[in-house]
Image (cartoon, rainbow, N blue to C red):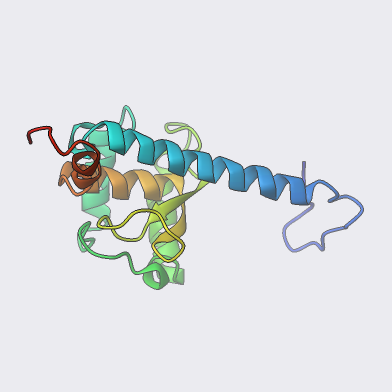
Amino acid sequence: MSLGPTGASLDPEQAENFEDMEKQFAVKCVQHMSTYWAILEKARGSKLRLTKMDDDIYEHFKKEFPEFDPTETIDEDKMKSKEGKERWRNFMMAYDKKVEDYNFGTMLRANPKFEYGEKETIFAVRMQFYAIEIARNRLGLNDWIYEREHPNKAK
């Protein structure tokens, strides 16, 4: 469904399903978030592969965002600033036709030390999620989730 050319006003008569689309989008985001959390509860993040391209994504991410510290809280304002959006757009476009739903919206924890929550979660696109979560997983920053669920399992 096209909503018309960029900058065109939205005709309410033509957008009757827009609210349903938003609900479906929200449901898909929550499903993705819940599924990822459930996986982290069942397996150490440091042992996971999120895509077939994890190694390439990780190396590309480190090259393009050398200042990014996966242990720290994400600066959402910096990430979504004009410069931040441009950097992320350039990064993401490398995965067009390589990673399914690479530009689809999803939820991302702002800090790896916390669960998903209203104040701890930001809206991001799938490639931001993959890049950041792959980096966190490589550093073992998500292993605490598994360890909390399985306190008797040895490291």
